[in-house]
Length: 139
Image 1 (tube, rainbow, N blue to C red):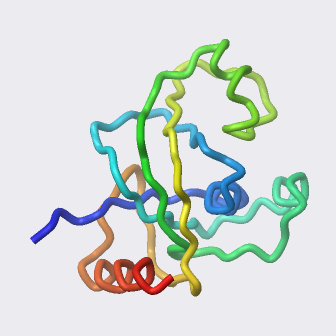
Image 2 (image 1 turned 90 degrees about the horizontal axis):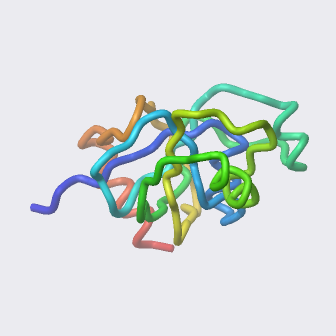
Image 3 (image 1 turned 60 degrees about the vertical axis):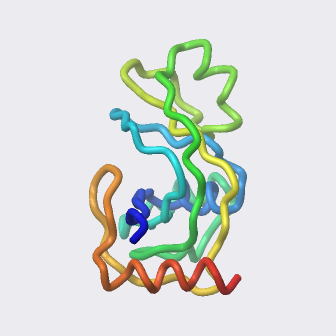
């Protein structure tokens, strides 16, 4: 049996920017040895002001919207922060202690899957593993 695919929960509008390919670096305060496919989960919190800044509205919340490949995690420094700004989409000033999760190949599900999320990289419950694998294979 293959190892379960991990998931990452991301707030909107960041999740939409990732799945649409506009955001290829997700910022976190932690690192991990995991590399490979990730299920992209959307948290429930709303930030309408931020969504409006990116010209987005009516975004899905509270479940999985697709998958993305995690290819690297690198420590951010002031130079990377500025030179990669278009890839991480943050408009604020550099903050020390962040890591950039480098993402590629986003694949959106035809239909989002309502499900709970968790902190850090997590393994969705077995009841969702098959559903997620099926959603990615029927695209």
